[in-house]
Structures are given as structure tokens and as C-alpha cells.
Length: 215
Image (tube, rainbow, N blue to C red):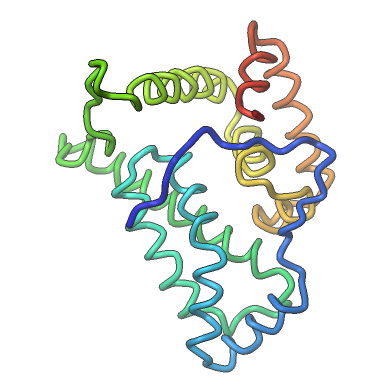
């Protein structure tokens, strides 16, 4: 039932994002859903569930929590879809809800830590044995090493630089969509993206890491 998690296929800065969500079909589905058509909304869920799940997972690294948050995102979207003024902006609107849910998750996690309530501080992946009968063991180790290296670099970025970078290269949003998702103007988004890229390029071995992520 859960989504398969692999290395993210990172977008290049020249990508035009062919799934930008501005197609006539998408606009039609959103408008039908606004009118109360549940079948149309179900199609929107099918279309964007994997994107929402991955967006959450990249940021919290827990499969079980990512699945719960994704469900919550679509419940909130269903409740508020009538508030969309421009159906073509549905994708950015949905991702805004997703980021808000992620922030709520982190706030609750910090609150629990204040009272030393750590009942869910586990990684959703079960331990992987490294015996010869485990062909997926090496892939698991490489995946964990990838995330460890990415995490170390992301921690050196400011909050906005990190979010813009993730939205562009992991979630594959274009500049306009990032601006809409974060409710910032495009020039601000570009500034933070360029700063993030500059910091990444200063890291030793980052070119090889990004090359592996794109493959």
C-alpha cells in the first residue's frame, strides 16, 4: 500500500516541468471537484498522491507518518477545494497544504520532545540484513548513504534556501509553482535557489552525488 522510495530523480534547472498541472483535463477535474463531484476529486487524488507522499517522505523520512500526512492533506484539500480561484494553480495549492501539514508534524514532534514523549521516534524502514540472500541490502545501504550526505548539506542551508531547493530539485516544481506554493514572488525564489546552489557547489564531492541522483 505504501509508495516505493528510491533516490529522487532530480530536475535540471532548464526543465520545463511537463506535469505542471495546467492541462485542460486538470482544470476540468478541479472545477468538477469544486462543484462537489467526488469522482473528479478521486481522480485528482490518484494523479497527485505519489507526488504528495514523496514530498512528505523526503522531509520527515518516516513511511508510516508520510502515509498518514498524505491522507490528511487530501482530506484538507477536499474540505477546502471550493476556495480555489484558479483551477490551473491546483498543484501549487495542494503542495502549500502539504507543506503546512509537514510544519504541523515538526511542531508536534518538537512539543513532544519537550516532555520527553518519544513514542514514535523510529525509522519506518526495518533493519536490513546484509547476508548474501538479501539482494536489496546494497541498494538500501547506498540509499541511506545518499540521504545522509544530502542531509548534511541541507542542514547548512537557511530554512528558505532548503525549502526552495527541495521543491525545485526533489519535487520538480518550476519557479512559478514554487512562488505560488511558498507565497513568495519569483525573484525571491530565484535568489534563494541560487544561494542554495552556490552552497551545494562548494561541497566536496557534490557533483558526483548529484550525478548519481540524476541517473
